[in-house]
Each structure stands twice: as structure tokens, then as C-alpha cells.
Image (cartoon, rainbow, N blue to C red; front, side):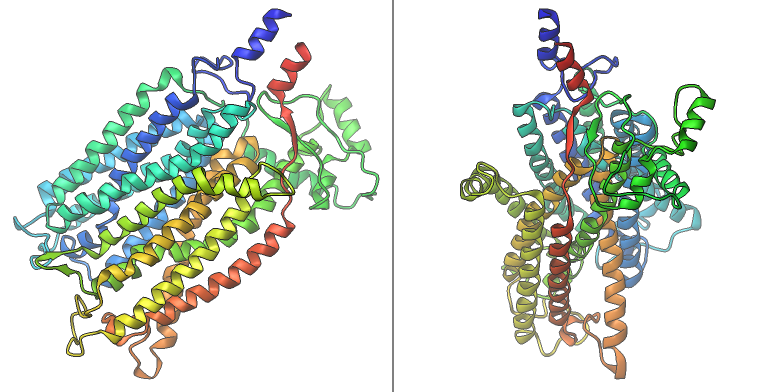
Length: 588
């Protein structure tokens, strides 16, 4: 008896295991020691990724010889592809490889792509010598050199995209959600994870961005490759200490089994007021039994035992056919995914707002006064204020705002804002950011250089620092939206779909890029009728970028209303203790 109690105390209760497949010992594995390694790894990987991404559009125009429209379109496709690859990484992790192996393999691909890009840039692409700056573009390249370039950047996209959703979930795996102390640390981890991501991009947006803007492309790319390699080595050093969740059967097979079983029983008569549903006695270690809910009643048919199921069981020996009968927990897993989708769809429009920071905000800033005496401020470096805002609001929320909301909460004392409430606040702040950007654009146009007809750079006397409020508000909205989204999807997704849940967060950014490009195309097609220059022409002084910002504010406001309806409809997952914990308690 005493031995079993000691085992309950020293081992984790969420089903996590060590690298040998044994139950993880709490004192020797996981917690902040391994989480900090993962956070530093995330910072280094993000530094490497944005060391390429932050000035990729300039590289395409100055080195690869593309025009502005073609370069912007290719960057949007590349960025969107990065986040699409996150779904591939999540699928492999949840179904076959596990999070640790998936992270290691895709990080190796990431490093290989960066090394290939660095080698090809220094050896082949910068011809003639000294090209690659604003006033000295490079000569056209052969098909082989162009293919080599695209192979390297899409290898980077594959590596970073496949790694990113898994590293967030793998970091959360280092904390036992069944332990009160570690459970609190697990929630805090997502905030620090997003902070590490932003701090990594800060160096890229400032130091590396500056050198690349000066034409020192090999230096910037080799620095990114070195950072990614250091991150990979650091990640591997934590191997003996990591906690793991071993992947078992494909979660998508379980998902399809419910749909098939429910469809097969579509014609049977069901009394929904007196359901007798199948609840499997066998359960996988670390899983949680989920209580039955009333939504999506059609799927409940998959868990109804019929005479045909009993006959099938007799014929097969001792088990039911999983494609004819599913457990309540399995049915509820499908319901969980279906309930998450409307919430996820509402985050896509927020991502449209977020993507403006890397596109239209930069174009707007470039057309403002960017000089302080003889020093020119790169418009893209203004995103540093977004990163500083993220760091400030993460600290302020965890130290001050969350405790304050917990004290003000009368219905559930000592509990702060829910993840859905925080995401809603993020949408509201995003609306304010778009309104701020629109107002700045109105004043920029009032101070524009009337003689500027071709070049829009520095064509307004309004200082670029008037953009600071919109960047700061975007940063604040990220803390509420993206951090809340990571926590929400991780807590509400079924056990076997944790990486997929993190990939959904990245996929919303991907779709945000595509929707943004589509929206710009529609706006330009409508606004350029009757020989008008349109809202977003090449020379912004001839357009009305402010109207586009206000349009986004209006669309986001409408999205917020839909979001409120979805959150009202949403039902939080309710489950019993994990199987490993309940077994331990029964043994004691």
C-alpha cells in the first residue's frame, strides 16, 4: 500500500512517459527545466525564420528581379504555405511520430533549408558582386539557380511550418495538468511561449533586417542558419529529461469511425430522452472519459448499441466493430472538434488585421517621414513596437490584470478571464488598431508632398512615429487573441489532437494572408473603376488607404458580433480524471 502511494506521488498523473516509455517521474523529468530549453529553442528558431521572412520581399525584388506585385504575391504564397505545412506536422505528430521526433525531424529540415539558401545566395545569386541593394539590382538568373532558390525557401517553410505547432504543444506536455502547481505553470507556459516567439523576431526585425537592407544578404542568412542550428542542438540536449505522450491509433481514424457508424444507423428510431449509450470499459492510458452532451444529436447514433452490433460482437468473439459502434468519449471527441470550428473561423478575420502589420503598415510607414537627421528608419522596423507591446502586455496581464479580474469575478471567485473572453477583447482592440491606422492615414494625406507623383517614399511630412499607437494596439490584441487561442484550443481539443489544435492557430494566420490578398484584389477591382487610382495604388498619396482600414474595422466589428453568438453557443468540454490517475486512485 505504501509503495503504491509513493508511486502515485512521484509519477505524473496525466499519462506522460519518459523516453523509455515508462511513467514519467515528476522530480526527474519535465517542468520548467525542459520548458525553458523549449522556450529558448523557440526564440532561436523564430529569429532564424524571420531573418529570412522579414525582408524576403526585398530579396525577391532586388536579387531575383521580380516587380513589387509579383514579389508581394510570392511572399504571401510562401507565408501561407508555411502555415499549411503546420497541418502536415500536426498530423504526423498526432498519428505516427510523436511530438519530440516530429520537432527534431522538421527542425533538421529547417536548418538544411537555411544552409542551402545561405550557400546559394553567396555563391550564385549575388551577381554581379555588390548587387542586391536598392539602387543596384542583380542580373537575371538561370532556371537552375531560380529552382535552387525556391527549393531552399520552401524547405525552410516545410521545416518551420511542421515544427511550429508541435513545439508549443510539446512544451505544454512538460507540465502535468492533473497537478495543481504544474497545471498553473502549464497555462503560464503559453504566454511565455508567445513572448519567446516575439523576442526572437525582434532581433530579426532590427539587426538582421538592417544588414539585409544594406545588401549583406549572406551575413543575414548565415546568422539565421547559425541560430537555427544552435536551437536544434539545444533542443536535443534536453532529450533525457523530456516528458512524452506516445501516439497510438490515428485520431482521424477515430473521427471517421464516428461519422461512418452514425451514418449506418441513420434510419434507426432513437428516443433522445432515454438514450442508452455505449461507454467502453477499455481506455488508453492518459485519455480522459468525456461526459455526454446534447448537441449534434445525430452523432449519438454511433454510440447506440443495436441488435446488429451484438450479433457482430458474437461473431467476432469479444469486441464490437469500431466502424459500427463507438464509445461516448469517441463521439464527444468529434463533437469537440465541430464546436471548435466556428470559434476558429471567427479568428481568421482577426488574422487579416494582423497581416496588415507586415504589408500595408510598412507601405504606409515608408510614405511618411522616416528620417531623424541623417539616419533613416526602415519602415519594417516599426514592428519592434508591436513586439515590445507584446512583452509589456504579457507581463502586465499575468502580474496585474489577471489577479484583478479574479478579484472582480463574483460568479467564480479567484478565476480570471476565460480564454474566450480574452479572445473577444483581442478582437475589440484589433478594431481600435484599424481605426487608429485609418486616422493616421487621413493626417498623412493632409501632410503629403503635393509634388510627389512617382515615388511615395518619404512623401509626407508626418513622422513615422505616429504609427506607434496602431503597432502597440496590435501587440496588445495578440496577447489576448493568440495566447488565449493557444490555451483554448489546447485545453479543449481531445487528447489525440493537441498538435492539430495548435496547427489550427497557425492555419488561421495562413488563411488570414490569403483572405487579405483576396480582399485587396476585390477592393482594387471595385475602386479602380472609371479610371480612378483605387484605394491602394502604387503611390499611396493618390489613393485612400484610410478607407481600407475603416473597411477592415467594420468587418472585424461584424466578426465580433458573430463571435459573441458562437461563444454563447459553445459548450466547454467536461471530462473525468485521466485514466492513469483514476487507475492509481483505485489501486490506493
